[in-house]
Structures are given as structure tokens and as C-alpha cells.
Length: 446
Ligand code: ADP
Image (cartoon, rainbow, N blue to C red; front, side, top):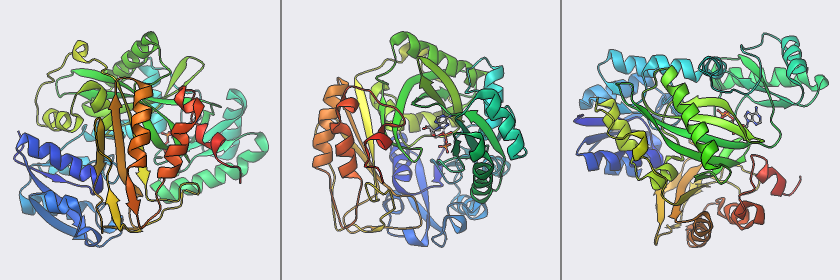
């Protein structure tokens, strides 16, 4: 087991990892930029190291500074959290070279699954249904036109190296292609330093359903069931829940077993998520995230398994203690991402929080690094808190979420709490009639 873990992240996920380490009796090292000196992850870690100025590329993304911090503090492993360096194969490789255990899958797997078009190709070989599209990135818009004609409009152009909803363009007809291709390519190049683009069939009203995978170093891989993440804004998740209200036990079994088959095919290790789109009773693999997800708590709630501790144990070489049959679904869980942003325009609203009173009571969990008086920096993403509830049924979960949202008081900055309330009060949401288009359909047209 590790003695000391460095957490290469900030905010709520850094704290979440600290909690897990404390429970496992492992010492922690926080890294932080100069903007985060007063952050809770710095306060609660056993040690902390300043790694640079506020912009992420000078601090949380700066590999030499993070490795130096691990060496100075004599840490033996690094937990990357999500975002930042969590899916950077080069970082995982450098950790390995420096004798630091990267808490996640090996760099070869991150690299293979990190390229979305490569990942689709491998999953197809593994017998996992994938969204129809070009098998390889396309070299120019004419090639994109060729594939679009073959699969039929609408199509979506996606960055092979993409993430965070960037570098995607929906193309409804031939005449939109040239412009959309240019835009997607330049956005991909600017965001990911890799401008390769592939073409995929654009599903009109799918659900986003993903499967949580957990594997050890000895080829044991299980699934912890699915999460539904269809409530999205700008292709980014806003509300997640588990289990999905859309799946029958039979389809759930088929989906989750297919995900395990895919993960086994690539020799997956540690925690990961296979993302699918689900439409007309069929599911299609979209991409795999080779890291812990923001929405992991809903899975923890319905399975009773601590995913961060499981990641740490798996990385330290422990054998999986669960069989697939041990995994049961207990009740229902839902998460609202509370962002520091304008609820309807989605523009970030950084600033100082004057009052911060978190929701509590039965079945409520809040993962956050915010507090009264803290400053939300414009340098990082706008996620302020995750409000997670659990209850026996989905209906009880929604009632609990409503009262928790109403008693969560955040003053001094704008948050999207009013939007969450609006969503969960909608009849179609309550009936489970949701899709990735849900939010677009209820928002006032511009
Ligand atoms: P990122 O990695 O940038 O988050 P994803 O590939 O995970 O991008 O897709 C994010 C979201 O974009 C999906 O949850 C879905 O809402 C939408 N999307 C992506 N591909 C398609 C598609 N082929 N058809 C319809 N919607 C899609």
C-alpha cells in the first residue's frame, strides 16, 4: 500500500481523494497554483507544494513542476483526479519512469482509448456496437462529404482528441459541410494540439448512458452498472443519475456486459467509463474515459462501493475483492452540478462567495471545496459543488433533490440552482422522458 499520495488536481475532486486517503491511512500532498493558496485541498492535505501561477498550463498542467513536487515530498503515487493531466498518456508514462505510481490505467491504454476514432475502431473489433461513421479521421471536407453521404445526414464532426464538448459540429446538409469542417478543425487544433476530425452519424434524440468499469492488475474486470447523463448543456453534463430510468433489466445486463467485454478486450485496468448513446432500444459506443468521472458519486450511492478507494487499491496492486454477482443496485441516486454560471446563458460567473450554506439532511451528500468567503477564480472550470441525493425510488430522489436545492444557499455569485429546479419540476423529467435534447427544448428560444 502507498505511504503518500500526491493529488495532481484542485477543487472538490482533490478533497474527495484526500478523504479517501485519510480513511485508508495514507498521507497526502496537495499541489496548488498561487491562486489556490487558501483552498481547502491545501488546508486538508498533510503537505502542500506551490507549483506555479494561476493559469493551468503554468501550474496544474505543468508536468515537470508536478513531478518535482512529488519528488520533493517523497510521494509514491499520483492521483490525477479528472480533467487536467488525468488522460494524458505522456504524464502517466513520465510517472512510470520516475517510479511514481499513476493511479489509473497504464499509459498504453490511455493512449489507445484517448483517441476517440481509434477507440471506436478497437471497440468495433471487440464486438461492441459503435455509432456508424468514418473509421479513421478524414483528411479534408470532401472526404467528410463522402462519409456523410454514405451514413446519411445529419452527421457530427468530432475531434479525435476531443473532450469537454469542444471541437464538435453538427452538419445537417451537404452545403454546411465545408464551413463546419473548417470550424471543427480549427477548434480542435486550438484546444487539443491535434486537429484530426472524424465523421459520425448524428443521433437526433439519444440518451447518454455510460457504464462504470472497475478492473485490477490481474485481468479481473467488473461493471458497477450504468449512469444516465442525458441532461446536458452544450454537450456537457448537468444532471446525472443511476440507474437509468430508460433501461429494462434485460437491456441493462446486455449493455453492462458489452462494456465489460470491451474493457476486457483492451486489458483495461483501474476505474474507467464506457460512454454510449442510446436510441430506439439500441446502444452505441461513443467513447471511453480512462479516469474517474465527475459523476462517480451516484454510482457509489447505488452500489455502496467507494470508487476512489477502489482506484487506489487497484493501483497499489490489490486484487479485486468483488465478483460481478456482489454488485447490486440499491435505490436511486441523482447528482446536480452546481456551477458558478449564469443559469440560462451558461457564461461563467466567478467572484467571491459571501454566504455558503450547504444542503444537508437524510440522503444528501455535497462534494465541494467552496466555503463562505472563498473566491471562485476565473482561471478554472465553473463547477462549484456537486449536490448528490439518494433515496429508495427515483420519485423520492427528485423530491429530496428539490428540497436540497431549495435549502442550498449561495450568495455573492450567480449559480445554476434556479435552472436545476426548473428542470426537475418538469413533468417529462419526472416521468423519466429525457434525452440529450431535453434542456434545449425547455429553454426559451433566443
Ligand atoms: P466530449 O468528450 O467532448 O464530452 P462526447 O463524445 O463524450 O464529447 O460527446 C458529448 C455529448 O455530445 C454526448 O453526450 C451527446 O450529447 C453529444 N453527442 C456526441 N456524439 C453524438 C452523436 N453522434 N449523436 C448525437 N449526439 C452526440
